[in-house]
Length: 295
Image (cartoon, rainbow, N blue to C red; front, side, top):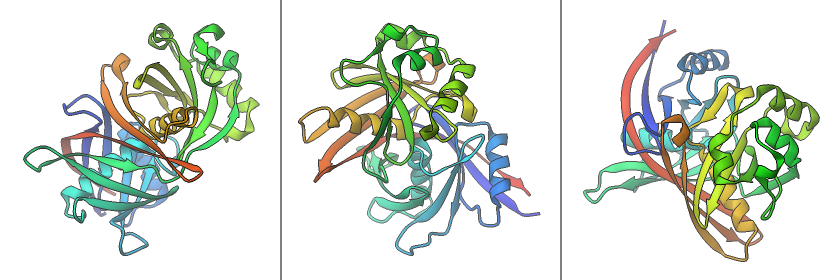
């Protein structure tokens, strides 16, 4: 048997037991895809990452990301946290590093306090904004036990948006956001009715006060009843909101996970580059514990 070390940390928070927990197997050479999926299921977190040598020598690592049920091409808090861990292990150059994930290359830059100590990381989403079809507000409301009138369409209808991984994004009222509860059977019905969802649905709800956002994300079909902090959904939101304006750049502060008792703070910046819209998401990370497993 071989032993595989791992670290856990809380991402998008500056305090333990807040934010979104993550497990990082920072030397995963030798693990099969089946073993990685089993470990992710055993960890029972939103995602678990596994680090391998990069395919391109100038990059820091190749990172595979698994949630409880499947491998993911990109996810925000796992990439932020893994970049932070790898920097801790000496892989950063001048405070930055490049990670290979399924959706492309993710640029990571460290966040530091006034004394120069690394406190977290900011990542650039691996793909520009891509918008897909709309989904009926009635179907979205049913998925989270709300009324169709709770889903606001003044700015946009519920829409599939991605910067490396797709989410259906819907704006709701502040009160509706607090009362949302996932209804698994309705998630299944929506997935069955919309082939472009490819068998799964991450539903991101947000309430907006100018550039301050309160958000929740539900993905029960992937084993994530609710997620405390969803970086990949928040970059997609930032890109979507910028696309609805004439601005060249916008900065958003997102609070997520409050209803779960794991408050998270995410800082999102979106900007235009030619015809494309790109975005970053960043936040703090806190180390929690370390261990190893023999397989």
